[in-house]
Length: 122
Image (cartoon, rainbow, N blue to C red; front, side):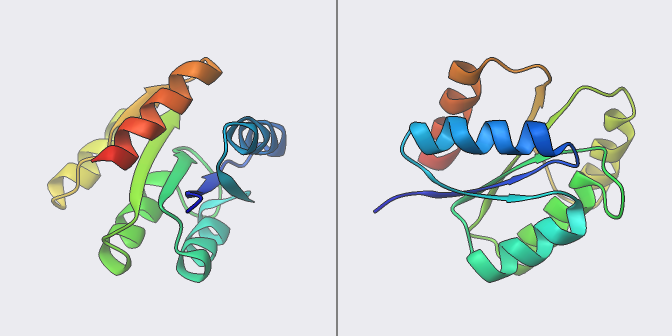
């Protein structure tokens, strides 16, 4: 069975590029371009994993990830960011009982594929 990955980033070029990288690696990929769209897509698609940017308009990736974990606990979430304000958002999640792994942008394709594979493995 092909693993489904939802990629959420407000920069379409990044989301689309990651989607193509994971498609080539054998995943079924879907994209969303902000946190609200990502939350809706996750609830509709029920992916195996969500790979999301943190700092986005509409809804940040940490808030989206917490909502996904509440309503879809079987879905894994992996976050990535290149912005300093990410730390405060992750602290907010931890105060609410959530812990998310964070990859720092830029992430080489081989590394992000490896991290997603590890997250899916458990």
